[in-house]
Length: 255
Image (cartoon, rainbow, N blue to C red; front, side, top):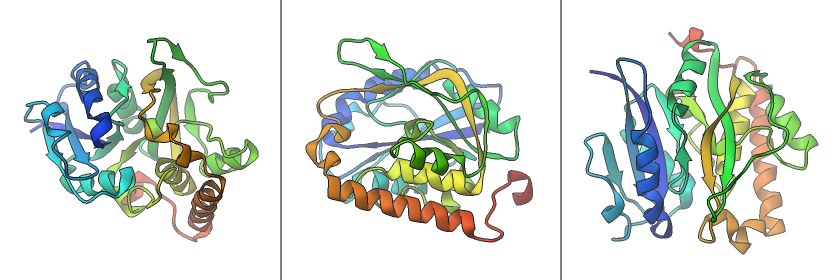
């Protein structure tokens, strides 16, 4: 039986039409001998809009549940995760060829590292791509450095949380994604960084689709009062984790 990387995708009705592109990007992944991926698709809600786009593949599982936004859907999807490693893939995004293998190599070659991210390009409606300024150099990300950068740069993280690849036991220990209406992946990124070193891969690993129906393009996402509340609890959690004596993750210590 192969070793497995679990790819978790939360999806709601309007984004379901992009699932075939995400699936195509999974099919293009080449993994080392003895490895394969499992795709866990979890609908945020219970509608008839998503299932028609779910591919007929034994490596794919589909679940539904009460509406609670992406954080709850992803965390519920963890109940079906079989892999030692978990990769997040939003329904409207796509992996680049080789992305999973690079993520896997980052953690297997560096057993003391708990999570990895990669360079991300925005995919615009006209098919063009735009990169981010200020990506860190390829290599380890010091524990705690993400919060420091985030605070110093007007709440902008140094790496993109939509590209996270994590050890499943660490993800479970942190409780999955934060129960927030948005920024749940940023909250997880800061929590991961508070207790563990990470890794950044400079080669592009994710195409982040920009389109009118995405949640982050909605007016509510920019509501200042909600934004302040989200970021306050994100920061507080990261600081508490960082300050807890003995709460340091090292994969070597979990064997």
